[in-house]
Length: 94
Image (tube, rainbow, N blue to C red; front, side):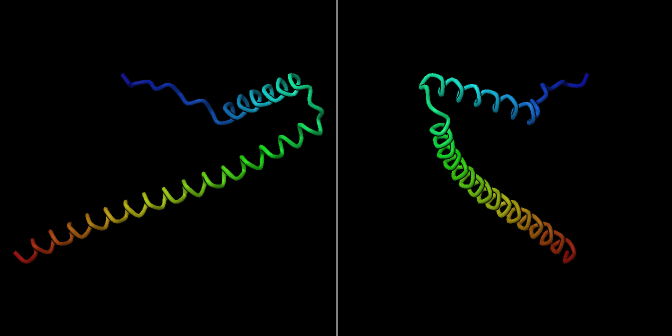
């Protein structure tokens, strides 16, 4: 019998859930502090700027990590091919 695996939640559902939760939190914070909308807009603009900076840094880090992994993979693959070539050369010489 084939093993069943719990399916991952689709990204569209995660997105909708997160957006709803963030919106609810903002609404609760605005109500709790009785902030006027012009202040909320300024706060959210600042938060968004921080998130954008963090997102760019995260992308740069992930890209660098991926490039290192690719470099290591290709190095190992090349070493394997060289070993196979040398092994084949030795067999031909014998």
